[in-house]
Length: 202
Image 1 (cartoon, rainbow, N blue to C red):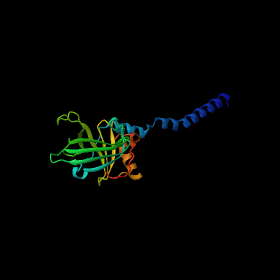
Image 2 (cartoon, helix red, strand yellow):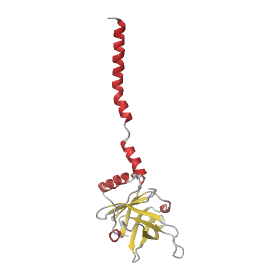
Image 3 (tube, rainbow, N blue to C red):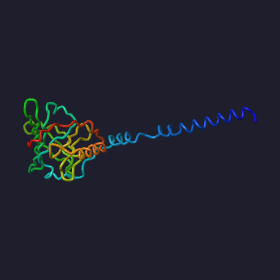
Image 4 (cartoon, rainbow, N blue to C red):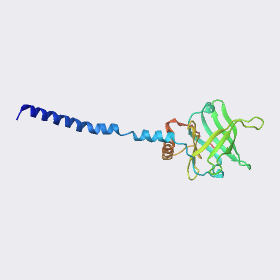
């Protein structure tokens, strides 16, 4: 049989082997990165809130467990809390406190319910001029424990967020559940910085 036949056969087998060996790599590279795709899809979707909030149960003292750093909390170094007190007219008094290098800082505000069907979308104002409040910020309850032991608050643009709890600390498993929910909602859990708490009721 001619030598050229064997040379051609060897070349054909070599090319076939190379093609087979490259196929898995090509297939793998063609597969999209599922976690990255899921994160992008979550970030692109409108931020969802919880379906319903019982304001009477939500009221009271909350400890800040972690938060996306915001300029208005830049002087806070720990022991950050929020206390919500419902008013007869449907608004909610807000008292935020935190420990600073010089003592305790307090901020008094007012919250109003925007979505009265769910009570999960609110606005908060900490600035008043003779009773007029020109500036309001979004306060959306985007995750909430069935027993109201913890909650996550955010806004439609995902630029701010707070993890709150009824106790100064949360168990690791509970935090893992919250972080998973944050990812599903399009947040980066790593952007939430833990808040130092001294476990003293306030």
